[in-house]
Every structure is written in structure tokens, then in C-alpha cells.
Image: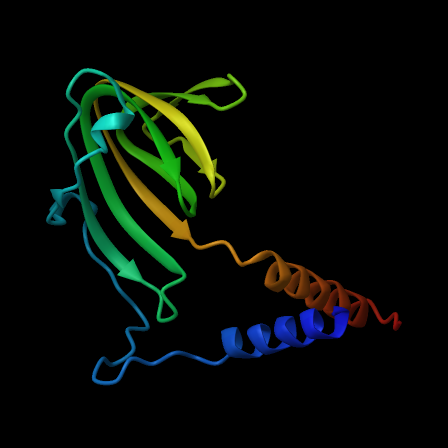
Length: 167
């Protein structure tokens, strides 16, 4: 059983390291654009998540990695309070306005323009927006546990090799 997991992890690591090219779409090595000129489309918040008010959210995708495991987007929202489930790991930088964030453990933080926050994939947080918030979001799909373990092992072995020690 253990060798099957190791084999699956090794195969997954190899597959992850091979660039994925979608036929007919040339790779985009560089994407740039002014965040205040991006077209934002409606991104309704699940009504069962809304705690208070009538928040209206919009999103505009800036870029997506070739393997679709990473994405950058601009998101904004009007006043309201809602719970949010983070499917992916997400790092945000507030561009305008502010948001009061309450995490699952009850920690309360206020993120204002210029602040950066990180939300682990698979977690909930409550967002309270008093007037308006606009953020840039950097999203990354977490690796499945066996792949993450193999990746950490590979990194540890590389670190040992780079320090001149061997195993």
C-alpha cells in the first residue's frame, strides 16, 4: 500500500512539472493592466451566506496560470456582512475601502487599503463591509495531501543538497 502512495505521489509530481499547454492558446508569459480599468462582472454571494444587508460583489479575472492552479483577480463589494468559504488558498491586498474579518476561531481583524491578508483554502471567515471594499486576490489551489507531502520532501532534499550535506 505504501509503495502505491509513493508511486502515485511521484507520478503526480512529474505531471505537475510538465507544462500544460491548451491547444490553440499561446502561452502568456506576461499579463499587465491597470486594476482600476478592469471590467468587473457580477459575482453574486450565495444568499445563504449573507448575514446582514444586501452586499453586491463583482469580479474580474486578471490572469490564470497555464495549469489552472493559480489565478489573480480584482474583486469588489458594497456594504453588507456575509460568511465566505475559501475553496482555494487566497492572499488579498486591499486596494480601496476596508473590511472587518472574523475568522473561525473568533479572531477579528480590519484590513484597510494597503493591507495584505492570507486565507487558507477550506476555511470560513465572516466579512463585514461598512461601505465598500476593492481587493486584488491571488488564488492557488492547494495540492492534495500526498502530493503536498511529496513536494515538501523534494524541497527538503533539495535544501540538503544545496547545503552540501547528503542523505
